Amino acid sequence: MKNTLKDIAEFVFQFSIVKCFFRALITLGIGFDRFWTFARARSLLDIPKGSNCHWSVVFKYPENIRFSGRVMLSPGCVIGAMSPVSFGSEVRLSQGVHIETASLDINGELPYKHIAKPITIEDGVWIGAHSIILAGVTIGKNSVIGAGVVVSKSIPENSIVVGPGFRFIER
Image (cartoon, rainbow, N blue to C red):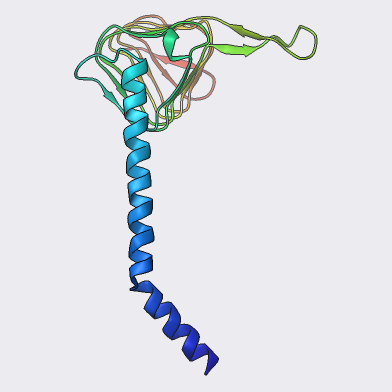
């Protein structure tokens, strides 16, 4: 008999007003969070008209981020700009791209101090999903960075960089 009462209680809760209320509350909370993140990004950054910035993009030190033209920032991107980060026009960052200008000076004494170098991403660059762009890098015009690549040195114009080992592919 206990199992039957438990089953009835679960069934009633599934269709109850309480469940509907909590679902509505959660949906409102998520919607407000998305709106707040979007409004925060638009107020802190001068994002050019026609750009697309997903609400989940994280901006660290937004005062150091500059956009020259239209950009597309996909979900889950992180832009850490302790030093300046500049984007050219028609730049696309795929899902989960991390751009980080800072690292730790492991040659110093503990606690390690942060050191930062600027990053420049020129016009027409596409950066594949889950790639990481590290401090001091310039990615030349019309270059493509494949998914999962860690870029630790500058890339010349019209380059395609893919896979582990940082291979260049001729265009």
